[in-house]
Image 1: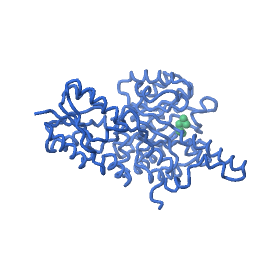
Image 2: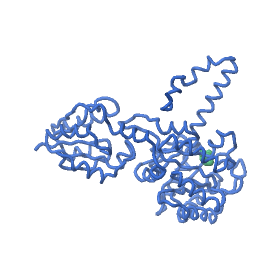
Image 3: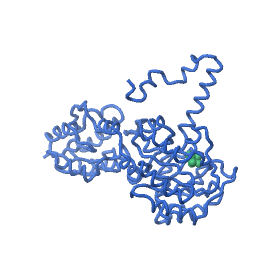
Image 4: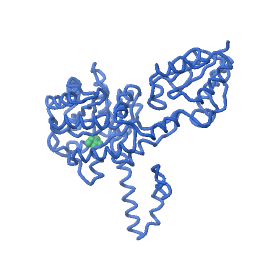
Length: 432
Ligand code: SPV
Ligand code: MG
């Protein structure tokens, strides 16, 4: 009997998969290379079903003899081990982002005289299409809340972008870039206090109250399905913070990040140019513990943000605080820096790695923006937050258009800087 290898994710098993398997069956005994949860989360999307659940489904499909895990999009490791006579894949991989993967498979099969078989791609269905359809229905607070912890567990780095209204939520939800054989997109959203305040014409000093911030979340949730991290500023009084936790959790927010400062809050990026006071380790630890006690689900995350580097209190203080906050129950640590050089954050990461019971690490590379996601991930960072970039990029463009109209006393010259009327009419589905 000849050996046939088919790689699949099969999160939603559909007739396109069955068409492939039917062809594969006619060539020999099928081994399915089933994408692991990590592989699906890193290269495609967060799996709906776990590896074990998907395995149970696929191993009961007629013709499937064996199911083995495939850890990456790349087939190399499994093909070398199995040395199949055939690899079966739909014709869709001849073009586009999967082209390189196909070329590598052919090269490898040549080593032992294997062949690829390419049944006609089933046009009217794909897992991505079905998942997009599911997402367009929406989500529930519970499902959304859980996603962040899952992503942190599965992805080498979770990529989060700032949002401040429904439209920016749509951008995080829908923008995708195809590269290296996979589709890259943002995993989640950050409701920044800076951009939520600025877009309301208010300073970032904990002036915009929780009720108003919840309105922002409400419009974002109406337009998205991805998980959301809430910038909780200092978290306020402990007596208030416990209520904030419950409210955020009820709405389906995945995490709150609170910073270890007290008194009138000023934005961290002012550094020591303004008066900012750090909370005591004891009091901030109490706040974390009280929040943890207040939460209802196991999935909600309370993330402690350390401001020691911002306030020039030194690395030792930052690490001591990380240890104390973890002890107090923090689900993750966010370390902040306003240095241009990533060296400060990197040296924190290396010290942090020595902590035995360390929790996931969050970084916000606003000022040290040269550092890449790969580099952050190698240093042990689990979540990267691009904290203000949608508002910061929109603002100069809006000012420019306003000036052009004033200068020309008409709007014709501004057109080239604007999305077309047709495009804006159709930007949000359901307008027609
Ligand atoms: C925010 O986005 O509001 C933050 C991050 O808290 S920072 O502006 O860098 O302090
Ligand atoms: Mg903030």
